[in-house]
Length: 376
Ligand SMILES: Cc1ncc(COP(=O)(O)O)c(C=O)c1O
Image 1 (spheres, rainbow, N blue to C red):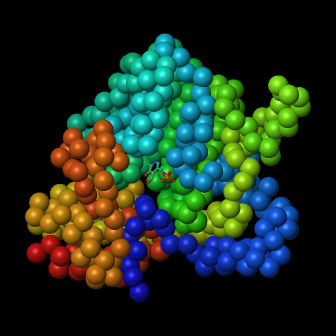
Image 2 (image 1 turned 120 degrees about the vertical axis):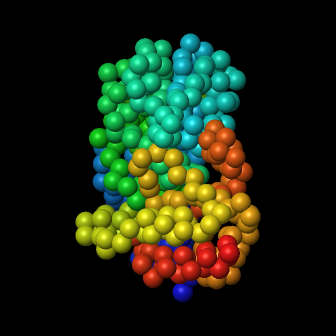
């Protein structure tokens, strides 16, 4: 059995997720895809949205499905009516894809993009935020957990700081939904985005967002698809919902959506049960720290199940390959995917180790042993 420590890439799908998707594809092949969709309309049009709303602790009208987290993010953020007078706050932990969109919006509108500073510990400087927040801050964008290191940013506390102000608050929860208790209601954000395939252990090709009413009111999507809009005249169309679904496209992989539904339900059932008590993150962190020559990339005071490190003598690519040869799957995090933080730490590639609830004490022991063999 392989030891899978790449949940931050894609988690291992539970059997019921695989079964429901295989079954869906078999039905499509036998009966036709539209006919199969009709048969499962209850899940596809309702059940999956209710499950997602429940996992995110968000109103069901606010949730929408996409084919990945970046599509969710760019569909909502790209539709914002931003002007050159607005300031956008991002953090050094911003994901590169999100940053590309900010750069494009800056080029188009002239808005100012500012980076919230860090304290010496690597935490976001919340006092700086309290002191500097003003009416002209139009948007604040925070990743709950970044792509390239395991800091957990205090998104609920930031939400409380921002609550009295008019800015929109966006949270990239791609690496946190499924591993941390994420509540849109408690965070108080206007947008929260994520991917199905990571800590939710759903299929690839699924992403989602909670798009709150304030963001919906501040956005004009360039396009509305036919599940939410009707052409009414040569020069007119009507959108017949204000729900977040108006940011979606109509066509999608129904098998993947049903797989996501199964993953969401599996997550809800699993998190209702007591955990095993095994702190895989701590075991992995200790195992890395015990190997001479390694450097943990470990900023901040709160940490998620995502540990990155570099080694002076052995490249991240080599460590990944050597661990893979010993049955242990980890991944290489590219510094330029967290471009405002990792390169400044002298990191262009790091080894990323991301366990999940399925990681046993034996798994972390296998990792520790293999790592000691690879880095001597
Ligand atoms: C923090 C973060 N945001 C966004 C994304 C983009 O997700 P996707 O690949 O589903 O578009 C990732 C992907 O790894 C990520 O780690």
